[in-house]
Amino acid sequence: MCGRYSIYDAMDDYLRHLAADRTVINGYDHERINRYNVAPSTRVELIRQTADGLRVDRVKWGWAPFWAKGKRPDPINARAETVMTGKFFKALWPVGRALAPANGWFEWIPDPADPKRKQPYYITAANNEPLFFAALAEVHGGIEPDDRDGFVIITAAADEGMVDIHDRKPLVLNPDLAREWMAPTTTAERAEEIARDGCRPAADFKWHAVSKLVGNVRNQGPELIEPVPLPFSE
Image 1 (cartoon, rainbow, N blue to C red):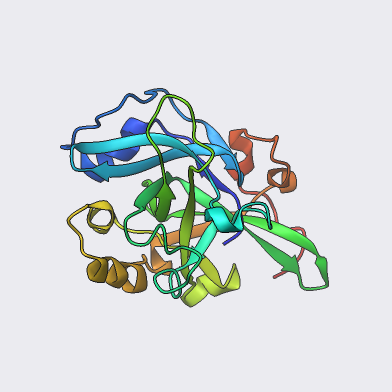
Image 2: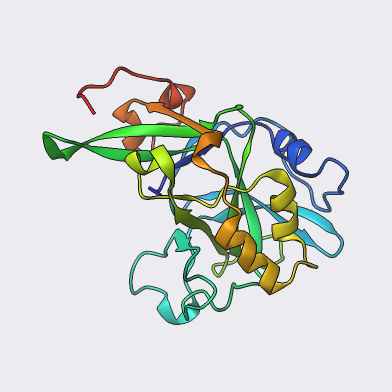
């Protein structure tokens, strides 16, 4: 999975698909989010569940344990195959389970004639409904953001035709599994099963080429997800 995604609806829309009957215990903005080009290291909406209800927090995309800070950019993704057993994410697994709501994500495909040229694609749900990326997060309470806060999106191996776009994809969960993923009562063993087997299949998605303007993090408008003609044959 490459490092960009979109989240542009109002948070109420994501919550309605996820858990309309659950109380959100902290305040959040009810306006449209309108972020079509979320980049690493920026703060973006994340959904977590506590014993008292759901929380919506704006958390930095990217996380590293304290002993790895400053050695390299904070990772933004964690592989589903190793996140439970590796040392790096030990502080987050399994207690830091969260959801990153989204509308779609971007991947870049090299030009067969010139690998240095890459064409961005936008991938979204075939039914146009919101997506829920399985995530792991460290979030501390308080009015001011904490430097320790951050999250990573879990990725899984791509399947079927999506391999042509990229060999990895976000661990996208349907709403039922998304609720189970973030529930405090879900055991580590069950969370591992969801991470291993719960990703929605390629048939649930559609994709199209988009403008290379998405490569510039300053560009944020809806034109970034509109289809464009392919500049080269696949």
